[in-house]
Length: 107
Length: 145
Figure 1 (cartoon, helix red, strand yellow):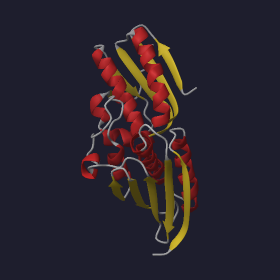
Figure 2 (cartoon, rainbow over the protein chains, first blue to last red):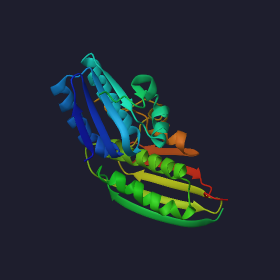
Figure 3 (cartoon, each protein chain N blue to C red):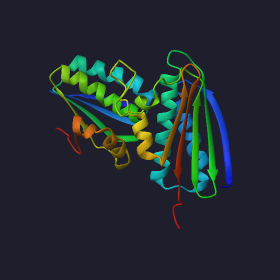
Figure 4 (tube, each protein chain N blue to C red):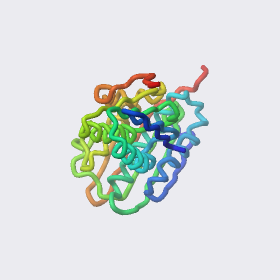
């Protein structure tokens, strides 16, 4: 399953997996938006630990979700980014936009 | 400089083929025994160029995307991604980081920036209504020397 969604009290956690490119982002964005609009969370966690590949379409995916969360008065936290994915995120300055932490598991 | 190997492939500009293009190029350059990072860099750059052709070149239509890869004696890899789509009016502007002609807010406008940071050289030639050609170059050294 390329996307697993966990809905908790104040947050939604989206666990991405596999290759996040333009093709994958198209389906992912709809599913993530549906979950957010239903749950109206304060925080959307986007977990990258199972992601094996990402190009700038993945950055666009995060950016679009960041705009959505911002419009709802919430925030996006990007978590568990593998080392080889961090390069694309750094080039895009995503770390300045959406909080990136490695951890972020809420119990 | 002697060309040691080359390949050409062409495919329909469907987004599902973005992964195929990455894998095909990665498989072809495997013979150079690249490091994990070099392979990842090349796959990512190819993905950006192919996605540009799918999303922008052939925007609301389908066309053929052409990829050619040439390997040279000195470890240089030259990848050409070509489309016969709508072309780019102002190449310099298109290559500005964060510039995007998409208005849905879903595209980051970082394709060229990523290509330039991961490859040694990025050359773009384009003509409106005719198409676009992107040439990516990177020198690869084998893993254990």
